[in-house]
Image (tube, rainbow, N blue to C red; front, side):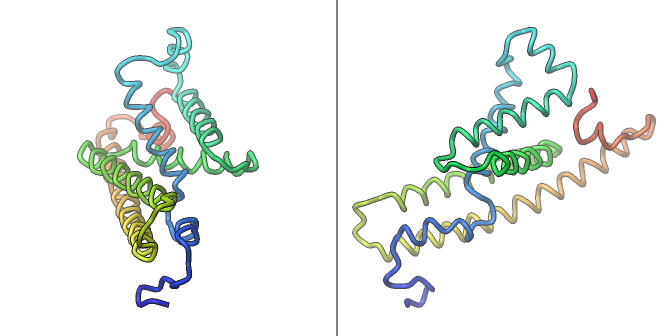
Length: 195
């Protein structure tokens, strides 16, 4: 065993396939990234027919159901493994909750968190690239790089969680303060004003 806690006889696949090392599953991160991009795209033009877009606009609950459907089908479609539908639904709901938390932020924290999510996603993609590379000259160095990438993804994931909850709390306090003239509703804060 080397000084970096990587067994000398471990293959790159042994190190790269260990999803338990990551705080955030790569499928979950891809789903979060997709939902953020999908919603940014929706700001410019509708992606559905006019009548369906109007139906979605009429209720924030319908919007959230459509988001959950989109996430579910993306996770199910993009996943190479055959998983139980309830496992896929659980992944989808985790992504949706993270989306709700990240969407309730100030502009600065939204930009910062979006950059963090992008960096985490790119690091994970690079790790997958390294683990699939068949013509590696220095496998031990590659194993160490993969472990380092997992470490950076974990650190950035912790920063993302902390900044997201700080942003959520600050936004909650702001909304509660602003809405003193009217009654504050937690459901409207979480799901939107059209519930």
